[in-house]
Length: 155
Image 1 (cartoon, helix red, strand yellow):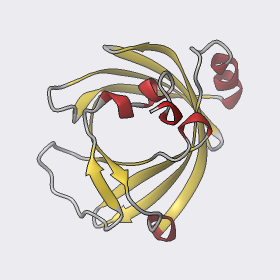
Image 2 (cartoon, helix red, strand yellow):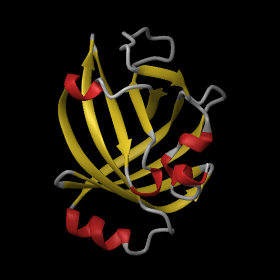
Image 3 (cartoon, rainbow, N blue to C red):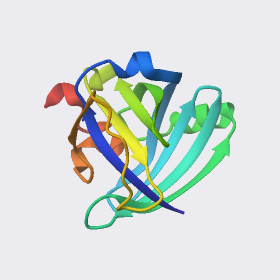
Image 4 (cartoon, rainbow, N blue to C red):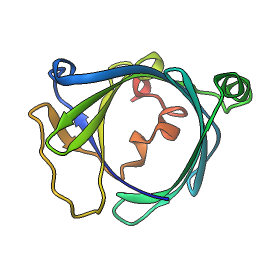
């Protein structure tokens, strides 16, 4: 239940031509406390309830618990979320042995594009596509929970 993930800004839209899958995501937060967030998400045709814990010193690893729920349940929970919905299109891009999830944000975060890669261990090496930009792992302002409160258009 530990997620090991690194985040990067995306410097071009070349990832779109390399994508093998894409879907729309809408999500809200029942709780955005820095030590624990509770997220409700509709990803394509599936709902999810996710709890994330505080990250380690590097921001690469943190507790994550996720369970699928129905879209109808997710829609009901979204109605009671804190203000600030996250809307994005997620693209999945294979790079070597890994999959990058590239989020092109809409709504109040339009213009922001972030790539994430999940790893088996923090020191794991991976292929870096040419469209991958600056690493922002551990920078809280790029967490979705923070983007819901302080959206990109206000930066």
